[in-house]
Image 1 (cartoon, rainbow, N blue to C red):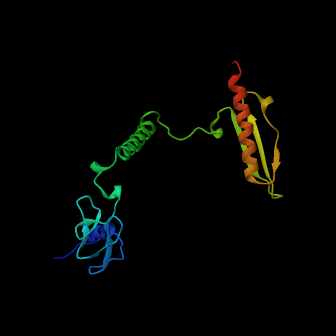
Image 2: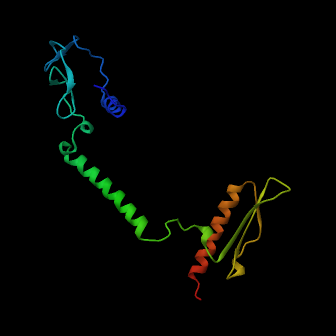
Image 3: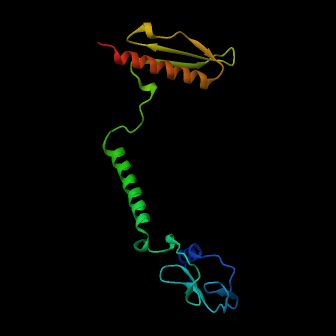
Length: 168
């Protein structure tokens, strides 16, 4: 009989690495003092490892068991994670056309300029309010790009809040 690659992968994935061979002696029983020679190594109907047809674990590895035999809590957690994933997908796909986040750069009333200054290692930034020029800020210089971006974001937020609360 020839084993295909997919069958071999399945066997390798299911393998449990134990340093026990047929003919070895293991201690069994409640106090692990009964000497027993290993004649057969396999798995039971739940997928748990066995020696001589008896389970070698006093615990069950849940991920090796069929899902119908999982604990109620594990089944609930699996179901809840699936529901959460489905809700996310439904919310992302059907509630809005554009799923990209709305950032300070998207404000229609605010114009942001951030640029490197060629004569030095500094960055320049300015924020302009189109509807109310009194809220605009003059150009400022920063040591790095991150500082300039942070300042423009904060100024744009201030202008957005002020113009949002104004009566038209």
